[in-house]
Length: 204
Image 1: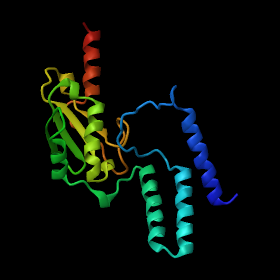
Image 2 (image 1 turned 120 degrees about the vertical axis):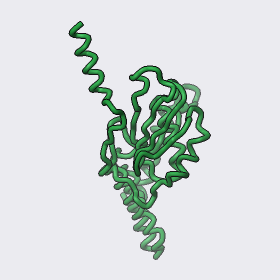
Image 3 (image 1 turned 180 degrees about the horizontal axis):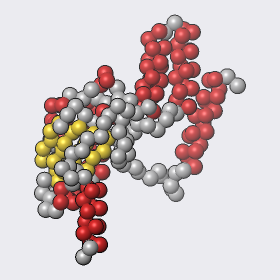
Image 4 (image 1 turned 45 degrees about the vertical axis):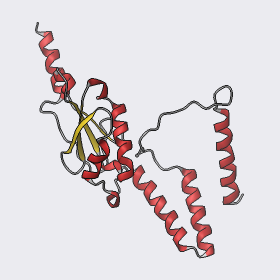
């Protein structure tokens, strides 16, 4: 089987699988848009498509297309390695401007090159879903894998409510991109505070 036929067969299989996963009545369940995700590994089907495309372009002498396929594979590899693209750095002021219209956002400031502090007005906005919305607003500006959103509720009345919620835009909670250090934002680590309170309760 040639590469082209293999790709066609794989595509047909994917379409068939998608059709089988439809909800009753032929409607697919709507899903909320999520930020781009890194560290997921490369997709063999996508890689094969780029290889086939580069080979076909080389046979026709289309060097621009060859370069495009090679760059796409390089981009996918960097994302699987959790390595941010230095050529797509997000402009800090443009990022702050993009967040101003978001409901719940009171202000934002860059702590350093990769850590963005966002102050929200209300406990209902202090959530991972809100971080998703912030990251989606930043995506048109560059590579959000280089950005860690640190969120604080400026209306909090308890120490727990005032704790900073942090996450890299494209990774899970507690994960960081390659070469991206973890920064302690709160004066007292929430885990240290939790252990201290448990110890206090045990002595009562």
